[in-house]
Length: 385
Picture 1 (cartoon, rainbow, N blue to C red):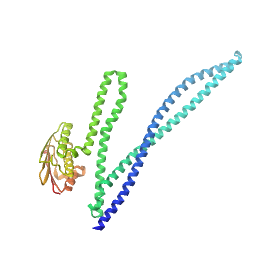
Picture 2: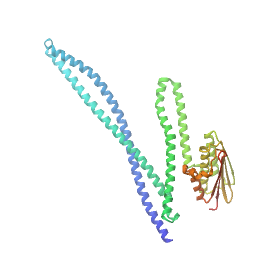
Picture 3: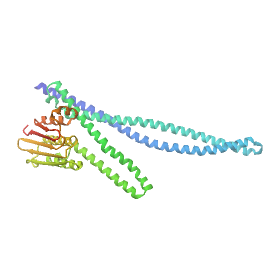
Picture 4: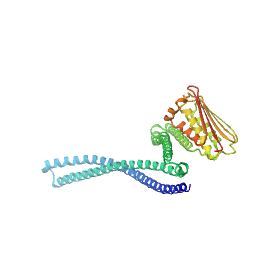
């Protein structure tokens, strides 16, 4: 027993060193990314100015080329009929043609230098963009590692006994965290990020619309833009709520679940969601692990009913007594063959994750479903664990 405790202490010391090293690396990579971002913005502004200068030089060169052509023509005429012109006129024609040619050559050199600088800036911007993207990916990956080290490995020596169990446990945690981060990343990319990108593009067009189409069209575009911003804000709030509803810590399970189901019903629009609760738990809070678990279980079940079952009505019921918590979710969706549950679990992490969470709480989960007749899920969790 003493040996196991000693091993755990040694493991914690090793983990502390790993956390400090990884966290330091994360800070350095983040700093590199920020420095690259600032440099990128600076070079973008410089490139903008260079392009303006290139256009100006080209315009000046075109005008100067016209004057130089006339000067060369004048010099050719003077040279051909030099006896008809005075020495002063001949010298003036020659000096003017020479001066214009020198100026034109200098402009051409300047244009070449500006073009070379422009091409160099564009190459550097591509390299900086790649550095920024790689830094963001590395920071994200290191964050996953840090979360794993902080949250999941601290007491691993006390929770598992043999090396194979430790490996399996760690891998499953990493896979679950990575899947969750991928899901959140996809939601942010496909939702708020796309909306905000559209807002940026449309905001740049508003001034032109006011100028070219008038104030009525301009205000119409602003109202549409405001709706896009409102939609993006809703998506951000929904993603934050999915990650961790703050009301769960402040209000408890029942008010948070009631609000969540109401929001989902309002957002979905086509599905009716009925919620009921029995038991004195709004005043007497449940332990945090039960509140979090039950909320996530209800969330997953309702999401499955909406996404896969295409249910028109969902009933959610929570019962709490001195010994047990019972969560029931019933829908009138298309149902499925429970004999194919194993195959369905390979396609979706949902049911498998629900079963594992219930097992961690020493509970039971039963699923009753038939094709065309909906699905009924009952979860029972003992409170005295």
